[in-house]
Image (cartoon, rainbow, N blue to C red; front, side, top):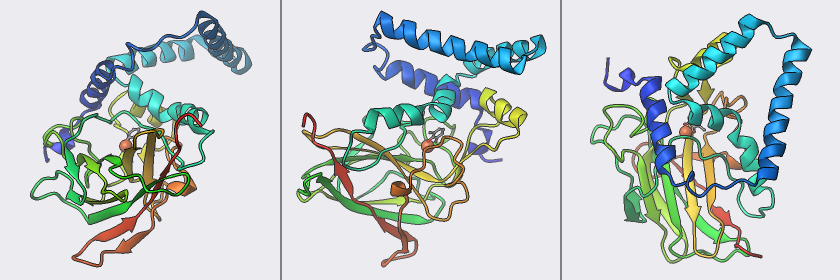
Length: 284
Ligand code: MBD
Ligand code: FE
């Protein structure tokens, strides 16, 4: 067994929970009393309607109670919410945009990954497994003008589907980096193609998936945050054609605009892809 395969749901869940607590997203949140009243009332009513319509039993009610307790104990609230709810929040937050489609952030983003000027190679182990991937493109504004020195943050799983800082035995910033595009908005990053990702099977979310007879897979994906002064931050994911889970992602986060065009590399072995990002100006 490699160190990586000893990754546990509780360890990755608790790391994601700690990361959310440290993210600064909580301190700045204030929700109006009217909105809390509306949203909480609707949520409670929806749950009660299900109980009445489906005649939920005490055994089912207690199974739910035990399961919700386990979600917290395993630190899997970030995973649960990001897999089954964030995609709708993302749709609402970005449906005004004219530029690039985005997708969900998910539970495994870490800000301030080491910065490098493009062209660059992302941090990886000397013996990093997998297919080398050259990822390049240009960042532009909606009017077509290149965004010089745009920032491209990239993070993704390794060839076994594990994320650094959320699975044991992986160097801190492995397959994570912040890349500064050139004066024409062009970036060029050498990385390693990620594997499909399976939701941890030994935690509460995995228990639900097994109990409901679902599958636990997300298609292989690159995570990105692309930004430039005066433009809305784009959070996105990019996917690989032919992945069998592009059509049934457990997190419902695939969009046709986010599929890469993968080519054989022109230099060395491996593959390459070009993907351009279009950012919306803020305050139009
Ligand atoms: C992931 O890697 C991910 O991107 C999401 C959205 C949820 C769980 C794991
Ligand atoms: Fe992911």
